[in-house]
Length: 186
Ligand code: IMP
Ligand code: MG
Image (spheres, helix red, strand yellow):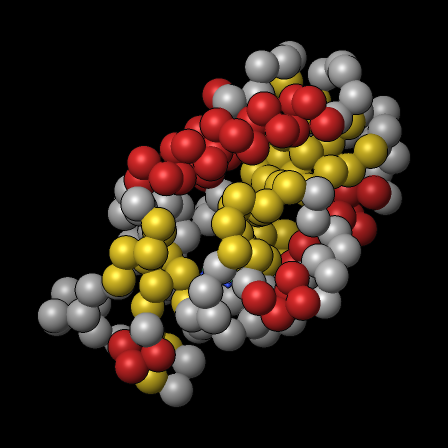
């Protein structure tokens, strides 16, 4: 499904305003700090979609932590999961013995998350926890087995903004927005 209409009268519909994101991210930071055992964390953001969420989230976690990033390509420029995950840029530091918090933007089928958790687990961390800003209804319905922390339920639509893109556009929207099906073309 290719996204069409950028800049020609089609604009994503705001679903979660910036102030609501800020409130929820602050709550998530406290929840993470309360629920995870004490000690340092390695927070791993999945690039590029999670960069904005990660920047806000780490400021809301009041404990010693380091930040690292995994570059991943799963969708290309389409809006349906290819099921193929490619690591385009690896972590800067080893995670053996570390408590890791993986930070994702949005979970749809869960294929990307499964792959990334497996990759991290294979490196011998003390633990891998997962926080996603949003989860789609289908993943929640499956029990959402890999998610420890979730910011919001996602609508059954393609979500953009607050770091997330459609064909690389819209990442700079300060709020979360939906591209309605009428605005995408199969
Ligand atoms: P999954 O593997 O089907 O769970 O897809 C997850 C990956 O696709 C995530 O890394 C997301 O970045 C991206 N993705 C899935 N749904 C959306 C969406 O609605 N908007 C933006 N990116 C999405
Ligand atoms: Mg992603």
